[in-house]
Image (cartoon, rainbow, N blue to C red):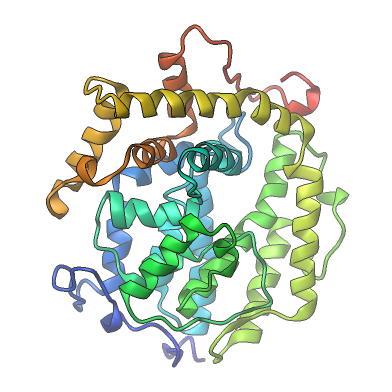
Length: 392
């Protein structure tokens, strides 16, 4: 009945409270509400297209039935909007956070994230994290004037850290946000302490996890890494993707309705932790995948990073990083203020920005272009074979 009558949660985020760096540029209006604007800004950002060929979990497959990052962000958005609607929250804000939460992710998934962090940290002492870089893409590189509420939800979305209670942490200004954001570059433990400041962001954070727990199991079956999901223990919410999504949505709504935080019960919280543990043991730490990442992808990252860095330091204007990245950024930011990307960005950050923006195929093609004489390469598994066959 509440849903039929358009129930609004008293703790929901209001459109009129949206805060922007340039407040007069994107005013909240009836026909263009604040967070609808954010959704449009993210969808029309040039890097949004690249979700389609970025790894979610499985990098080495030419198989359109295996999830790529584009589908993942849509699943997060759909699940989070379902919960948000039932809880009477601002679903436009939920959608904006969900659509933008991985826009700064590297090629080759979390393995690529680790390798780029290793390169960046070794030269600067700073840390790379994809959630932090997603904020940089929208707020720094492309300068899209996205709201504080959306940016904070993106920064704090990290779906690797499960909690039984997601309680928003108060924050009012961009200065507070900027301190929170910058701290992630210099303190490796800061990522684990991030807490969103809206209920909508809390919903997206838990839905990031809901979207992949069972879906990764489906993909592992399609990749022939596991026979089926019967190898997993039956948890409080089940073990298959449909069961996990449906039962977690119901449990969260029942425990969070009308409250000022997002909750699940103890049994479901323990089930999430157990499910994540099983996924690591039986999927993510697969020996064949690890060997491919360590023997092929990791050295490729170091080679590409060093070559691009040298081109920036020596100001080779005709190099790939100038023609395909710096010029690209300047062109796509010129309508949002004076483009000064090159002048205000240090060489290592420029290299990080370029590599993080790439799709898997973009990175592989760039490597072949820069190093045609080197042996490192990626051979993708076709529809008709699998890593389980031992043919890597």
